[in-house]
Image 1 (cartoon, one colour):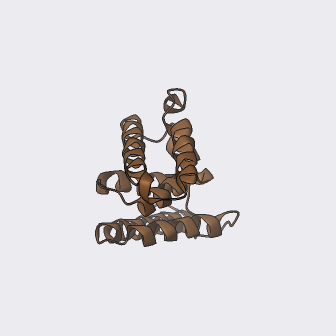
Image 2 (image 1 turned 60 degrees about the vertical axis):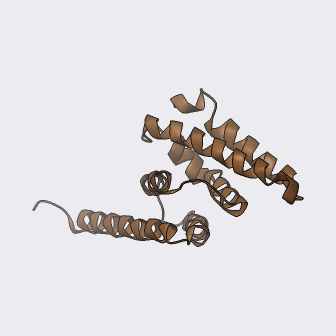
Amino acid sequence: MGHSNREISHQKMSSIKEQCLRLMLWLTTQGLSLAVISAVQSKLETGRGSSGSSEMDSALVRYFFTGILEIVRPPFSLAFVRALGGLMMKGPFVDALQSKHFEHSKRGQIVQLIDLFEAAATGDVQKIASWEEDESLLSMLKSTYCSSSNNNK
């Protein structure tokens, strides 16, 4: 076959990781989006700095987020906006979603998603006491993903 055992092992591991992410995306469709986002965030935090097979690389982050863009639809709860918005501000997500490997058409979807996040957050403004934190998150998301210079990386 011409492949080393290490390469095959890497290919198999990548395939297994993608399968796990597909399962997590399916769980998102079953009402477990907050649990899935929390699990991905935990994986990013525990995988940092390790060289083992538990690491979530940029390709997997892009794969997961592309799936999220295809699945999620408004109306969004404030808890969802905070969870996914917070995840989008994590370094590995920022790097992966702003890389040249992330489809340009998907970048426009991120901008639309952030607009929907803002609508969800501002719709709940009278009900919440922590609007300043939400406003700060939305501002960071906009400056990170919505400026034209960021969309051309």
